[in-house]
Image (cartoon, rainbow over all chains, first blue to last red; front, side):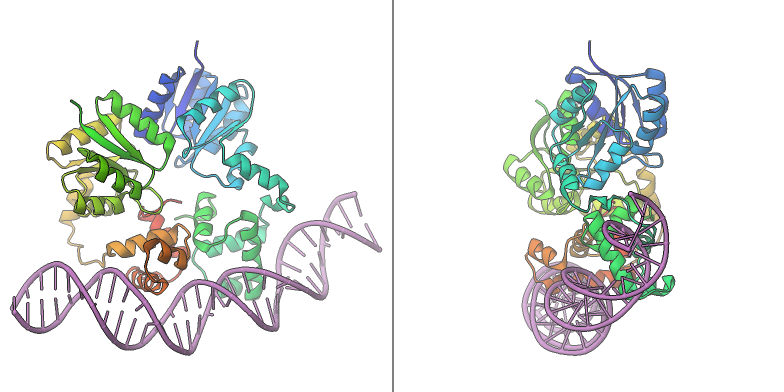
Length: 209
Length: 209
DNA sequence: TCGGAGGATCAGGAATTTCCCGATGGCGGC
DNA sequence: GCCGCCATCGGGAAATTCCTGATCCTCCGA
């Protein structure tokens, strides 16, 4: 008998595609959800072996759901789907109790292997993110995970479109100090341009689009 | 015999799911592409009946590809996949020669109907966007400074975090020209910093967070 | 057919910002 | 007390943005 799983993705079209794919791989799709909250309900009622969660769902996203499911249904293995291969997302996901981290840029075989792997109790990371995680451990300053309060504050103001000088004025510090914070947080996030910084800020909820 | 189509989506996982779905609906998937440029090449070589393009691809996105394909392969019907149901996107897509506009939030049946519809020479819009289009015709707001295709292209690349030089290299034009486009589009949008530009690009669906 | 409007292309140079180096002082933990 | 981390700044080189202006092209209407 096949592995039972529930599938959560806000795009019906994508979800149906994945469902077809997973069924043809021999899995049993016990239920589908369009957002994180629905996913949590579904997992509680269906009690599947695995929950496959898209991270990029609106409102209550895949990681929110993962965090809650890891607490209330620790027996259910969690596999997340995402397009982001940056190190900070991976560690964030692992902190949320996720056992499988699969990139959408990878082939379906990857998802199949992830599901089978987590059922055996393994942690599965898509090729390409394993490197990011390794790098995080090898990098001497991997304490760099969390931004300081000041850095997050500066990040938000940058993402809101304020100039370095304006930020300095608002925080009543030197523009040089703002530059220093920006430089530091960019280094921590391994992001080296403003545009990516803004996208990160939006994704991480520091500001809105 | 079935309708022949090519499929373009940057997420292999999603693409495979869609492929399985479309095949089980009786279509022939003649080729797959991971980005807009590849899609254009593939359509030229395979000459399918329909090209199904995800709009949200990095670098050279689905609309860029649509614009080019509408010019060089007008016989091939274009269906785009997107998550955005706002009016401006729909009209933008229609301007690019798109014949089918399918929301990812809709069921697979919708995509199937769209493909069959455009093959009969119809224009197919997902339920939910038809209303948006109607509204667009009722609102006499065409006076707005619309971005040119080139400007939108540059906007996307900026929002994706590429440097001016990198954009210039990719588009095979001078960095000065890229600066010129940026300056022009910033003036049109009345936006004067990169961060706000990125937020606008995300809001308007030119790129994703 | 002619001429204008607007888009795409580019350059020079001034102004601004980023980036990389280093430095100081405070504060909490060991 | 010492060490690590954070917040604070500065100098100077490098890169980028901003402003002005110019050429070439296509399309479109008079």
